[in-house]
Length: 164
Image 1 (cartoon, one colour):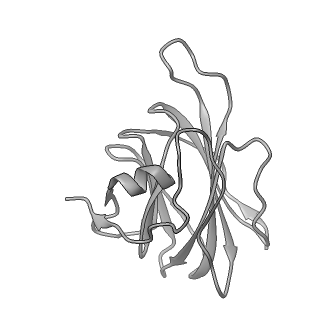
Image 2: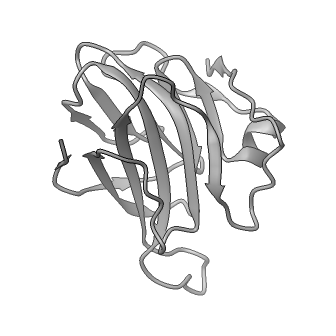
């Protein structure tokens, strides 16, 4: 069932990228300190991930048969995700939105941050953010790999409030 969509360019703002059920009214979440430490803010139908830089990035979305973390990724985080009838949207605040026709169902969503170049003098650098959906009857959240910016707690926080 492997399927991938063409890579897209997206401008990151407020150091976060979100993936959410298409048509959701308030897709962005209000981040608390514990969300920042673990690298994501999750609630039903949406999850925002912390990014490595506020810059133009590549996004890659795919369906996969199993969760496999990439060697090149500096962050690999898995969360449960239930896709609604209309598929999903990927966006950042004040940025473009890209829609992907992921089939309705329950998944383990693997998010990865893959640096494509070293940081420049101003701290900006190109990054690819990867979203891989793997069907799962019992999805579990976990941080597989993280960089020094994150300090995930033993028990990940799986509750956030909508940003207003």
